Image (cartoon, rainbow, N blue to C red; front, side, top):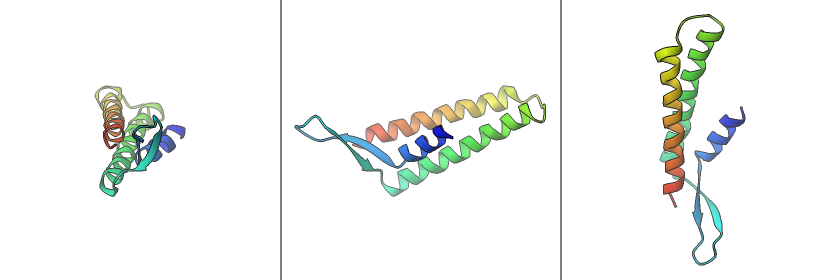
Length: 89
């Protein structure tokens, strides 16, 4: 839950430095980028949770490639969001 809240908040903000001060400030991402990031996290987290539910509760053999692929997709989405946040200064 903490990861979801952090990812949701970080998908809406970016960090940039203030010239000649060394300080950093938080800016809003534009609406399109923030919305895309938010929905990418929701979709990828739902996929990972779905396959995790099938593995743990239903006992289906979905670890590889379904759950593993959803985990790699989740990693890719988080790396993409981090790239958006760091590059939008």
